[in-house]
Length: 299
Image (cartoon, rainbow, N blue to C red; front, top):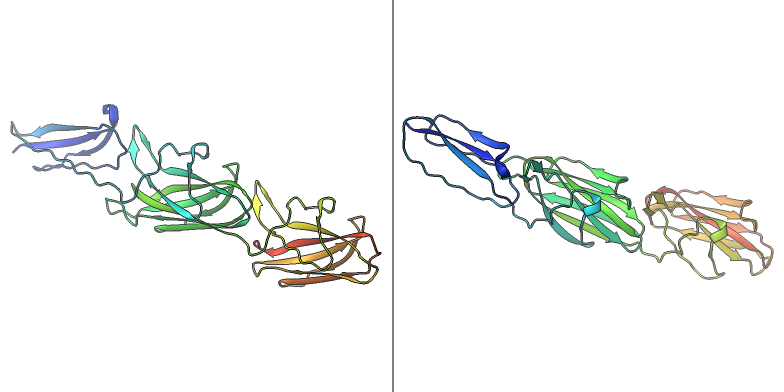
């Protein structure tokens, strides 16, 4: 009986990727490959002479590929905010397997950002295809969140200020397959304060009798906005009260300061979404109020 064996080689003829030397009239090799020209060797293992038939089958992943070369934050592909993109991971060529894809996304206003990756449940070999997700700050290297849960789905939630951030999708288990990456941005319900008001010297202005609004708890470039300062000019020497109400996602505290911006006049740290402080001012003098995120995420 004529027994032939089969070897699959990388582009350029080396190294060997798969070999089948079973003793029979049939042999088969398989691999998860990126575009290229590969080589197959059929060799006679046993028998004198005869003929053979060779056949190849191609099984593409179900979703459209990303633009390759996006293996670092410097070469990241661009993801759509409030939309989705697709990609492939785990495919091989020229002694290298594509195990990581980087995506960059830009946020133009404060908000809750939910990033989700959904992969094929199994690859073409029937093995579980499991991808993990990491979110990075604007420098591309400082990790903000990671989800390594087992299965076809991972997600991360961060609260971001404006900037361009990065998501890394990496293959944890399986061979090759495709995935969908979704990014959703949800802004807070109230208008933002003028940022940079993190000290009394750069406080935002409160107007007597009018309501102002702001955001707190959002992060970018290694820092989180935890304090907002507001100033108000006392219209008279009557008692002056300042109230703050927050979203359910945060508990904020309130501190009042004298015209020097340093001497504390009062503090309200009651638990919940409401705080209030009153002061006895001098007409025409400027006083300061600090809103501080005590607990929660952002809002």
